[in-house]
Amino acid sequence: TMCCKCPFGRRNLCNCLLLLQDGWRQNISKKNKRLSLLTDRTSRFIRVLICRNYMGNVDMSEIDNFMPIMMRREEDADLSPVVIHGSTHYLWIKHSNLYLVAITKRNTNAALVYSFLYKLVEVFIEYFKSLEEESIRDNFVTVYELMDEVMDFGFPQTTDSKILLEYITQQGHKLEVGAPRPPATVTNAVSWRSEGIKYRKNEVFMDVIESVNLLVSATGSVLRSEILGCVKLKVVLSGMPELRLGLNDKVLFEITGREKSKSVELEDVKFHQCVRLSRFENDRTISFIPPDGESELMSYRLNTTVKPLIWIESVIEKFSHSRVEIKVKARSQFKSRSTANNVSILVPVPSDADSPKFKTTTGQAKWVPEKSAVEWNIKSFPGGKEFMMRAHFGLPSVESGELEAKRPITVKFEIPYFTVSGIQVRYLKIIEKSGYQALPWVRYITQSGDYQLRTN
Image (cartoon, helix red, strand yellow):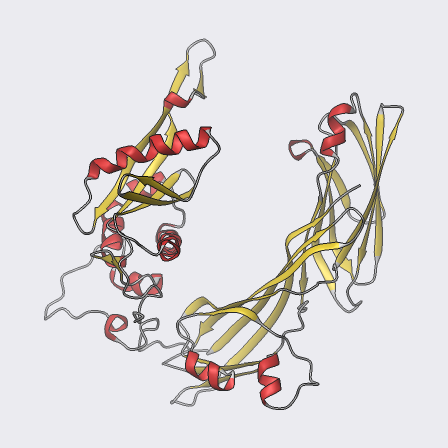
């Protein structure tokens, strides 16, 4: 059965949870009077910053085996997400220079453990703004309280940061007279929203954001394309409102006999826990009592062939083994009523190139030597337009440049008021027993994800 406060359900995930610091020992070079980092493998160290043994059946000396195994596997290029030593399993993720390690001796669902670890990272970031060694050391007490709340005897409990923020705070509390009562969200059926919320102006802001992942071959054929979408909310509503959201969902249109209408077939849909799944299965209506503030209502994927929104053609010419010229043509392949903002086109160049010269029909081009690339920035790129950029470099040696020239061109952009999939919000109804008037706002954004075009 699923726990109403935690998406992981009543499954025993791990026996012990640790936060470890990974780093390198430092020495001061007296000759150069500067700080240098040793690079030999023996100088690497690991420290246990935080540990919680939930079931008491794991010897804490087991963690001493973790890092030596990791170092051996790194040297052999054989890293795996699960490390096994005897009957002990280490499931780990790395965030910045910290390892989050779950230790278990049971046959555990590994996918759930990793979901829990990533959720724990989100909780820590919500509390401390950044998850690093300093934030852990400065908040030992809060971290221990959080670890006690998110898991009990190896079972996940509450992993919603909005709920945890109600009764685990970084500020001290004065003792209140009277019998202590748990926060309403802990015992309430709607655990993700507090009661008694009041605002002077009631509004809902909804963002429909789609990221386009695209890989185009050197011959111009699309090798891979997909759309990753999400619906984000910012809720400023009083009381306990119910929201009903309708999309141009293909399954819904087929049920209602409107197959000819413009619709979108959503795949891999994932909802926030506030959504009533039974109603969605019945009539495809997304009905929910929203969390207060910002949240992600749903995410989806469309594994469909996407026409490249910004098409790039490039020509690289070498002359007398001493210079190279790059010609790049960028063309927007969406309707003229839309405009792409903050377009950035990163064109690879040989690492030994020098003496750059640029000429563009719009925007600005600059050489980024640390990336061995030319960055062409276009602030506003209207639909149906075409622009050119020429770059000239000196090339002392062409041998190393041959391989580097095969790196793909990467493109970043954002198109407001537009969705590449055509998904639309048909309605957003706000129902609250007090009957107040609320304003819903909907915004559409399409942006680049992993957007690459290979060069000749």
